[in-house]
Length: 351
Ligand code: FES
Ligand SMILES: [Fe+2]
Image (cartoon, rainbow, N blue to C red; front, side):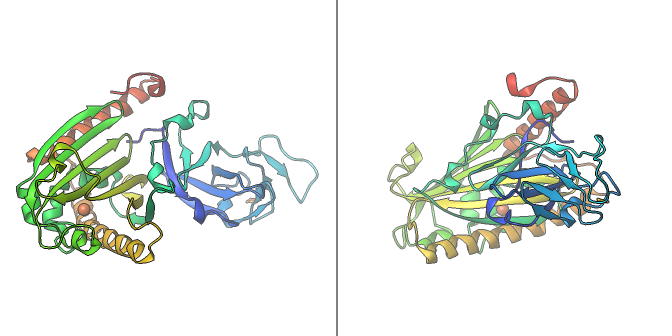
């Protein structure tokens, strides 16, 4: 069900400060904390003594102290102190997960530690590059991470689910759709020529008033659970359909769906732009519009998950627009099967 040898986003760096944070990831309890020298650490969230979550304890220097009988564990998960006795049992240790900070997120490697290579973290520089302005947050969604990925890969839904923000039916109906495989995923592209801009696009003030636009979407799935979206629009007939985007409205949406359990997800998202950097009103506009759109998605995803608790998740009816999502699902399933068979996917062609 999960790819183990992979990086997953555990938290925003800004949320890991001086207290331990509990996070269930791939159905495993993880505690994330920051040591006094600023290093982020991820450990199994369970004291080996009487099984209290370590996240209920406190950060002490370079270590974490259990909140029950005070055992102290270092960043490698080894117990280094037992306050009630001088002797530290050598078996008193918890699992340590490789953890790194990049692009303002804390990434945790959930598989074999010696395979953790930070070069495998997707390029999400949009989140922290000073040439962009990014806003985002974490949504807890009561739906499988794969349903969220499907949702992002098939944006034909924006014309129906998001009519108050980023969608209108013309966009979906006139869209020309293609998809292609990459080494680690799938890219779905849609061009909608000469369509009215949706409400959110109008509110940015970047596009000429009262004109139709050529609109594009490039949606890149990166296994196991990342989707990088580049969308936008430019005045119709000014080159966007040939791939010239710079003069138009460009938006990147960075999505990391970390499975919490089989049917719940911590969904980290951010919207990035290259215009109006440092403009608090633009920050608020993008944050609020994308938040609103994702609340609309949540209603769909959670209702869909509730039905899927009683039956298999399958495409009984597949539409043309599903091609990318189905390809992504198959790819992920093959990777999970190959990993279960003992292959090292990090060092071989992925799918
Ligand atoms: S349960 Fe953690 S020290 Fe006892
Ligand atoms: Fe959506």
